[in-house]
Length: 450
Image (cartoon, rainbow, N blue to C red):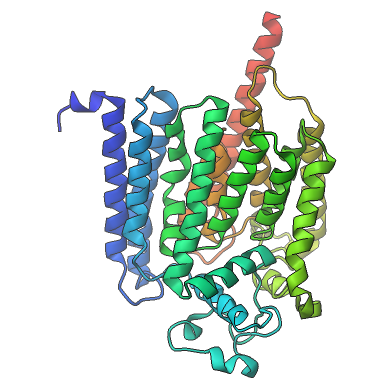
């Protein structure tokens, strides 16, 4: 390939996209068919190494779309290759996670007219629903009720009636993801930004693998968040609040971005709409009584949140001789107060002059989402791709990194909640600090000029 050919930014973009697609196919070839993980520790390490090469190519592509002027057809190149990457992975059996089998099970239980929060899968009351394809692959089936909130359960129920099975569930999750991508294309138009910036989410390798391969329900939350951002950008405050409330009933973390939807809006409208949706979605499941919140407390205990060891920062202090359990309450109080202070500043602060409302909305959403996710510091990779969605419009460097770099969490060579995760969190802190210093310097220069 000649150097002259690569002088065109659109051609370089195409080469990067084709390369990323090839890396996706190559990584899939490492997997041993039928294995519930990649196949062995050595294969898993090789798998992540190959994905890391794709991650580097992705960051180069992000840099290109942010710095170069591209023709309008570049957006079609971005979308076409995004579809190609997902098409490569969709036919494969999920192998990086077994969560989707619980989704299918919950849908099957509801199709039988049973509240999914009432019984664990192994309960004799559900014996007639067991099969050889789904039931044996459900994680925690012997002791855990479902953990998924009502909005997710309603989606599982719908898929369970229309297209029961793993492929139907994966297709539904990809449909939600495509809805989020479509919504963000419209937000980009409202903000007056180039449509090819959708690459920041659409080519994110972590999103591709999390949803096209494993069909995680987080794709539903991403779709609803994208629609909520679109509604808010169009000043449909009530609809935006309702959609954000629904997103929070897929995964709880989106509730942290609510203050971004309040700034410059009627405070009561999105709040009442969101609260109304949350109440309405819980009503069909109230018969579960005290089991309505499923395995939430048990999950917290399993993940180390009850002892503090599940939080990255506290796990790190544990290496220095501090007891994470003793620091848990102070950590939660400080994190809560910090988020509350930031939330108040965003909700009631003034927007920057000459900044489009859609950009301010997505920037505030990205900041709140990133800080809340880092404070919780989940060690499952698929908890992070949602950060890339608002970054399409407001590409904060640290947020773009956090939305994709947790690909490294697919392995943990040290079996430690601090050492290996530091490969993601330490660079994020450095990038965030550099951005803050740059912003402060720019502000001082502006004041000096005045």
